[in-house]
Amino acid sequence: MSVVLFLVAFTIGLDEFLLGPLLMPIGADLGVRPERVALFVAAYNLPLALLAPAVLVFGLASLATAVAPSFPLGIAARLLTGVAAAGMLPVAFALASESGDSAAQISRVQAGLTLGIILGPLNGALMDHLGHWRLAFVALALLAALLALPLRRAGGKVPGPVAEVPGGGNGLWSALPGLLGMGLGLGGAIGIFALLGERFRDLFMLDTLGISVIYAGFGAMTILGNLLMPVLARRAGPLAVAGACLLAVLAGILLLFGLEAAPIGPAALALASWAIFGGAAAPALQAALAGAGGANRGLMLALGASFLNAGTAASSALASELHLLAPHWVASQAAALIAPAALVLLWAARRGPVARAG
Image 1 (spheres, rainbow, N blue to C red):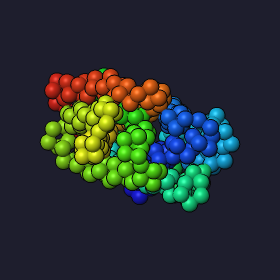
Image 2: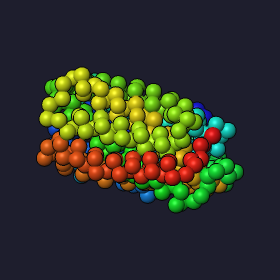
Image 3: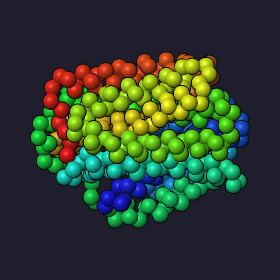
């Protein structure tokens, strides 16, 4: 079952982040500015915040994206893909949270998602290099078809009521800081992430293959953050870890998008800060929500996923418009969304004892 959960997260990550190096070729093919293609991210994440259907629809919707003859139909196909993917990650994280060492299991599922993040942009760039960007979505549809059988066999094993987490389970009010962290903090950062490739293209004149390498490096550093989270959470608690890490993520975004020109050294440092600390913040927030949910942790994690994807959809749509004006407007957006979420998490961590998941 753990392999299936890893593959679920991997498939979502592979799809969700393959667009990074493809904004320009998709825009050129469908007749829109590259920044507009970031709306593919918003279209995907909006239904993720609301619905939860099956992996076969996910594969069919990926094929629909591959054959979309126009930008509006491409947006519609991404909406359908988001509808199909909606329930996959919350179920994976909820099942991981039921294990004896839930923080470690959650970080492993997160690592599967991150591996998809690494290979997604590489898949997109490779397929574009081999023939066409549409092949990336064909490959994704084939992977979904292969995953359908083990998911069907495991379909009955959905998370139900579990034992209370000692010190946790105080309901929606205790989960509110984590939910805000998911929506404003993590969702705010992920929404901007789609524009990372275009920012590096503007700063250093990189081609599509070069941008895919940037995304792959980002993903590798994010895995490091995923694996560091259990150690950090045992020392400080997941809320404090998430709050501090989101501030470090914000610092990286401000440096990359706030300066008119960023030398390669500071840009690489900003990228590392964003990746490593973002990699720790994501599973820390999942662990915090699992602890706050108690017997209803599955429901709380699903709610967290809804907040995350709603925040990602709104942030990516706004960032795509602001980037057309100037990159520093994207930096302002990051400060307005991420800073309040991080401060709320740190305040909640100091206010009382934090349930340490696992």
